[in-house]
Image (tube, rainbow, N blue to C red; front, top):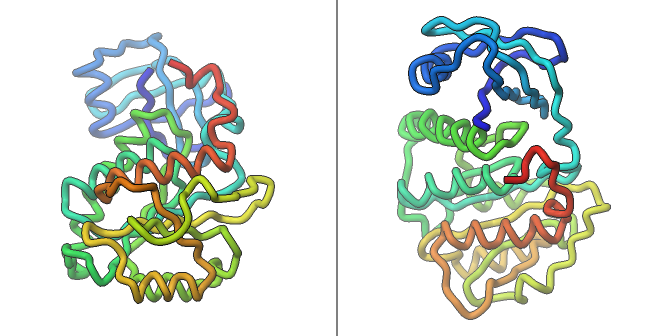
Length: 257
């Protein structure tokens, strides 16, 4: 069942509004009518089923009749933060979409030495608007109950100055040849501290960047003998880390195909 974003908090019996492009899609494409069942979500980890109360071209009113418990699904108490090096347009958009689908909580675009794409501040703001639309569209499609947070661009060295990297084994950098295999990672999901995952650009991380990361307590790991593209490496690495912290242990009936 498709789901639609609403700003308001959800409560059984309450009425919420879907507007603009989503409302037009519901009316003109899906052709929903009053009484039809619909699913809504907000950015407060809430999802609910309801029925269409009234429809207009730019506004659909929904009455909530069943709250969905998403606490045991693909979100848990440990945040997964991905620092993704900037890559070319198509690959970056794939990374954004797949990170949403895989349950990443925060994505931070990062500039490293081998980054090919260089964005000025005003260029990034234009990109960010498109990226945010991609993120929201992916959330609607995959059934998440919250929206992945998209940060502004940061320099790799600035990110490493953040306090969170003092946590041993809670920050991981993916490299094509250095470090231990990712299967050696030990991530205790009972420790409620953020997990940070670094994904390199097309040219990989520079050796100086690897050494700097190690000096800050970041664990260096690889994905084996194959060399992955940046978007593929992000998907594989996040999938493995999500499994290691138990994100796939419980899947609610509402989310099973």
